[in-house]
Image (cartoon, rainbow, N blue to C red; front, side, top):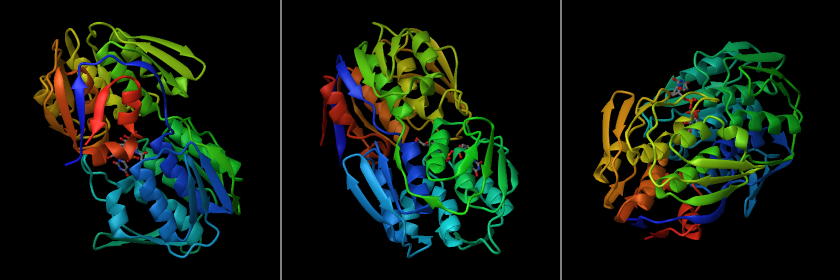
Length: 417
Ligand code: EPZ
């Protein structure tokens, strides 16, 4: 079985350029569907989730050309308005295509995205919002048959939770609807701002992205544009954690500092020194990490749930006890049992994890069960004594571009087998 073999402990040095954000590239690729003409996305990461998005776009009739991190999408001639079940199952976040297909084709047929490694992934907020915009949705046999009836109409929508995906789906459904849509309690993640920025470049009228209330004034149509995907703040946090657990001094290039505002204080509390200089960040990990009193995951601008697993690896090696509270997903501790196999001392009580730091971890075989947990196991392997084999690379490759090459360039002894 494919695995990463890591010889630890290691010291890292040098610099790493942070790739484009997976969680921005996916909705941006869906948004390309809305445009008459060609869109070019720069800094699009080479990830398996992006590959699936491109397969969906091609299935719908788009012409897609890829050259390095540039992806050109021409959605002029659509031929389908459905997403085959096998593609929906490969990536549950394909639900973000629903709004874009409806806006473009007036109908859409998708299978209900199953749960995933993080627990049931309901889409009730998506569907309730789309119904308010005039979408008729029939659910049967695990499929959704959607039509826009007499057309999409702007509406006042309040989200009970600032769901990232639901906010994106509403934006993609409302952008060409008749009239004004207001989203209250919208998600404020940087990826939402990146999507609004892209859509406005294509001729949309969206204001308030990044704040709690987004206002969308529907337009007739959208044209193509060129856009650069923002840097991946979670990949940045992951490389920071690698430096932290190995007591290394590395530089991260092409980051967006304000997107890490809730992450930096946690690293500094753990004893890391972080120096920002424009879009670069230097981080120096301490000889021994300090515990983190409380890491509570929250919607942006709070501490990101996607950074919880890699940062927990730091707590596992800290000189004292740390407490984590995962408030976003109900089942996002699957990496804990694998960290314990490496020698970590972690107790779980529902959404609360208590980590009693240990001086050392010991290499062994570990298996990932979801994307960010996979990253945590790689980070742990860099610090563990001896050889760590990380299995479950299909999860890792969803969100990290050639992570073993980047870590090798930083001096890690890591090979993909
Ligand atoms: C996005 O997922 C990201 N994925 C996730 O990143 C990220 O963890 C999450 O936002 C939170 O920041 C992409 O952008 C592709 P949500 P999404 O809707 O949109 C509940 C990674 O590792 N909810 O904000 O699915 C849901 O169950 C991935 O890169 C409903 O109850 O997240 C969860 O508890 C993992 N009903 C919470 O909201 C709904 O209709 C957050 O979900 C929708 C969501």
